[in-house]
Image (tube, helix red, strand yellow):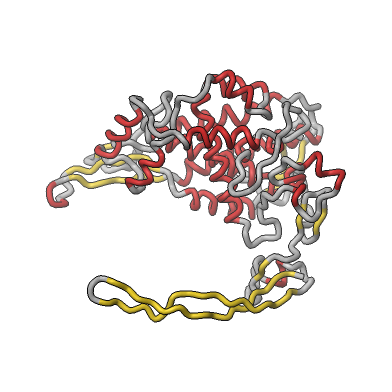
Amino acid sequence: MALGLLLLLLVVWMLPIVAPSATFSRSSTWIHAGLQDLARLDALALRATSIGSSSATRRHHHRRHSGGGGNKSEEQHRDELLLLRQLPPSASICKQLRGLSPGQEKLCGLSQDHMPWVARGAKSAIDECQHQFQHRRWNCSTTTLADSEVATDQNKKHQAAAIFGPVLESGSRETAFVHAIGAAGLVYTLARACRDGQLSSCGCSRGSRPKDLNREWIWGGCGDNLEYGYKFAQSFIDVREREQRHKRRSHEHGRSLVNLHNNEAGRRAVIKRSKVTCKCHGVSGSCSLITCWQQLASFREIGDYLLDKYDGATEVKVNRRGRLSIKDPRYSLPTANDLVYLDDSPNYCFANSSLGSLGTRGRTCNRTSTGIDGCNLLCCGRGYNTQKSIISERCDCKFHWCCEVQCSTCNKSLDVYTCK
């Protein structure tokens, strides 16, 4: 079953990258292919030492002096400016990115300088997914099944390149979240790349002035280009689902509809959590002039928002007209901002190679918590083991004139609880 978003999740941070499938298959997920290619493309951009004489530097300089959005340090800005748009010819780049659908390959050829930002969006999405689910039974693990204890000789060949494994082959809540956070990651990175002058096809936001903004304040500066990020992400992500020719009212058709819905929810989350930021200008902080612009929220805030949507996701089905409808009429209809799912989540308590579940055995739990991170729930009632752990930390720090802080080293004993 093709998952229309998962090219965004082709970059695995600090994990082994294995050889992907060489061709696009309608029955495969693009998370299973192109891992090495897109990672190499991102590395190519990051190794660049300058951006030549491009106008990006001039636009970035203008943004900094016009009160544009963002609060990054100078060092972070310099790191971002290392990205280089002068990559190998688009045709060769896009044909090397195995796992793209035909429509995505065409879009790649038209906008090959966007691909490093697709990779960055993927990395942001994976990192945020792992943060949000770190204390849950499914923890958004990106360990390949071929390297896990649940792998078998039969599935090693097929799942070696998987990031999440078969878990995302169903239309579950987890799949819904991954689609949403992946779409949000691409919108986010592209909107910021436009603002920082990293892409030749876009610049600062041209969004309209908010109606409730003080009339005496100036709508200007250089805001994050949410409009461009949204439109490109919509075209690039959704084209794969729209290319499918599934039988109407079939389960596969329902999966595509659900994927498209959750992709849209993720894109809207970025816009919904954005905010208007203003800055004062004037002598000695007199604030004689105020400029305002549209600015992205932190990606953590977007992740928190989508996790709430995950917890309140609505189960749907495909009706006779080939459209999505709620499965239980007692619940209210989901909006375009809500997540929906088609299948129940598998049991993540135990290792199951066919489902891609690694189980919760050996996971660290919180003995005193009554929440999902507590040993009772996380360990699925199997109990937990207790181990003593000694950690060293600085203590008894004192300031000595001038200007030095001297600390002692203290050993601390901690109890570590892991699921049986």
